[in-house]
Length: 273
Image (cartoon, rainbow, N blue to C red; front, side, top):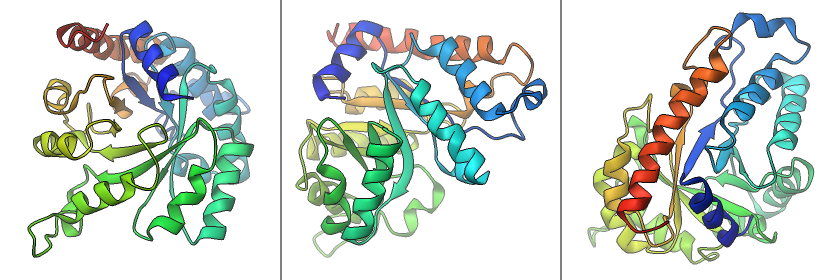
């Protein structure tokens, strides 16, 4: 999916919502366990209920790998089911030496046909660049994450005063362009976003942490929105597990609609519609 198509979708739907499909058999409604592929049945119902409100879905591959080959079959079916005008992000956090990264890229871009993949930057350019050789595909690099342990390394300071996460952002941005690289910036790090937006004025940020992790949508937007929105706000558990009953898809839609309406107001406020 190109940057232009992504922005067009945001404007059309008045939304920059990404729904994380972190599907756990222990958390989905019990009646779905009667199906041959309960993971796919759950995902399909969530997609059917929310596809007019979202611009991206983000299946976290760990929740599929955990179930072995059958889980990976559910992942493939889920990605195939996502409408072509909605971005599919494989949240796989891959990256390795070049020849291994090339295989990861072939797997998620050619076989699974995801539009984007999350990658870890620790091994540097030769581990990331193999993912960048695909037209209209995105590499989403971990920048400043929302987990408590992010303080262990990401905010270490060089003698210059520059934080490690800042070096990661500015260095990795040079590997590609704002048309094929995004960065993960956690919603619980909203106080850092203004500086990050100064460092990266054009790039899209994938922002997890709104909802169950306590991130605030309006705070994120006030610090990081740009003239092409530049944000994909991800919410997972607070949407997909809004109900454990047979009305789970309706409740997921209701939670998605709450966020979409807030996003429409933000887009109106910043004259982006």
